Amino acid sequence: MDVTCLAAGLLQRLISTVYPPRCVLCASPGMADRDLCAGCYHELCWIGAACTQCAIPLADSGGAHIRCGQCLQKPPSFDRSLSLFSYRGNAVRLIQQLKFNQKLAYARLLGSLLADQVRSRGIELPDCLLPVPLYSKRLRQRGFNQSIELARPVAKSFGIPVDLHSVIRVRDTRAQSGLDQKQRRKNMRGAFQRVRPVKHKHVTIIDDVVTTTSTVNELARVLKRAGVERVDIWSIARAG
Image 1 (tube, rainbow, N blue to C red):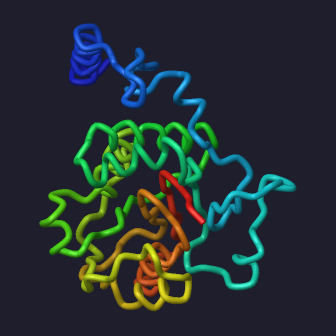
Image 2: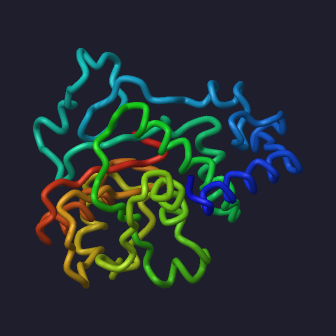
């Protein structure tokens, strides 16, 4: 056994013994060394049947692989999607606490839950993860990029590299909230720019919340134009 891995495992067990995990939602004892209890875990609005391309929840999947009417009529630039929760209830609370109150521990929790679902569903792993970039001004104001923080535990779990440099956000776009789908698409057009060659053929974009897919679709479009053959979207929540 690798000595470094053994030492890391012993350290984690020691930390868990001295500081046992507590649920961030109700303060009950956590489960599986996570800061989430079994009750709150099951009460989250987990997405079941969903479009395989955009992850919008469906009433009935009708099978393992089905696309929604929107994706059939106007296929997006990305190929497949996974979202854990519908954007309501405690999923909103967890994401907003991370995004606006700097609760970075929530990113570790949510990222590990995302990795669990990728593993349990047998989803094909990409060559790299690409967190949705923030515009430089917004990054300075917030102090961190929540998509990067979400990507870290996923990358660590699977040994996948995280690409932080190939694509940047070049426009400080308006907030997407309050805009309809057409306005969102227009708002995001030209928001991202490739600044380095993208060497990977299969890239997964990491985001916190996907609403109308305008942001991730624009980013996927840039990646496809750069020669990426397959682009997937992994997000914590799906709205809309």
